Amino acid sequence: MTLEALLAYLHLLAILTMVVFISSEAALCRVQWLNAAVVERLARVDTVYGIAALAVLATGIARTWWGVKGTAWYWSNPLLHVKLGLFVAVAVLSIFPTLRYRRWRQALRAGGALPGEAEIRKTRGLVMAQAHLIALIPLAAVFLARGFGK
Image (cartoon, rainbow, N blue to C red; front, top):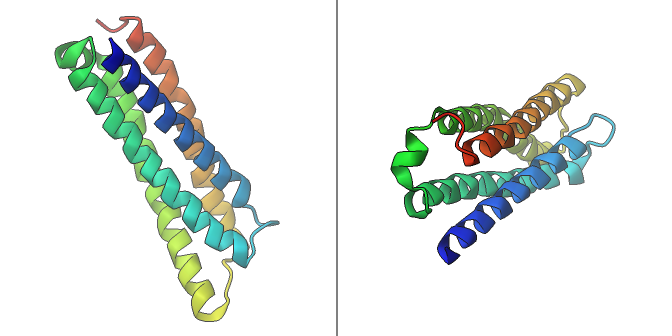
């Protein structure tokens, strides 16, 4: 029982960290605010976001292996696959902003160039899409936790 509670806590902590950092990206990645300091900060924030996402995945898998319900219960439930599908969609969307932040930082360090307005808007759109998809994952989670889909 203690292990189940600790796994749930670590999973929730990782989720909250991920949400905080995608929210930070959404707040920072704006045409009006983007300057050299923000480009550097976006790259750091995105790194923490990526680490948090890996922690969400690791703790979620740990809950299926060592949790009370066990792997057979979780992996046979289609709602787990919905959650994972949404998570994978978020992960795929996150690749593009990550690569852009790195490119922006390299260009900034090489010659002081900031990205264009269109690229900033497009990147923010991808960040917002991630944030909105992340918000759907807990919907599947609460139904999964209550045995729906079985």
